[in-house]
Image (tube, rainbow, N blue to C red; front, side, top):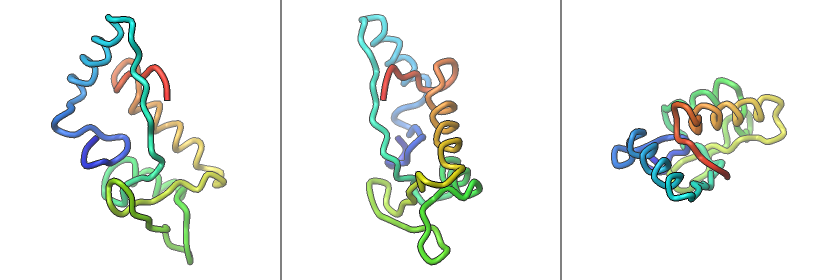
Length: 107
């Protein structure tokens, strides 16, 4: 994770290194299972920008509600918004892609 931002990899964990780690686990008949926090960093990066464009974050007085957790200021998906499931599914599909992302065995 890059500075605790969901759906990112930091410089210490490049994609090639993560793919090697998972391949190594699989070679030992082990599994890579992750936990994903739904808080999205309120910063200029793909997961936030796509969520903002899809209008899927909780709002307060018409503005995106800002919370504070691991990455600092965050936005939270509004699970009742009609666009949220598609947004969230796409983030998982692309980031955790078995063919060209971080391959996972479970959540």
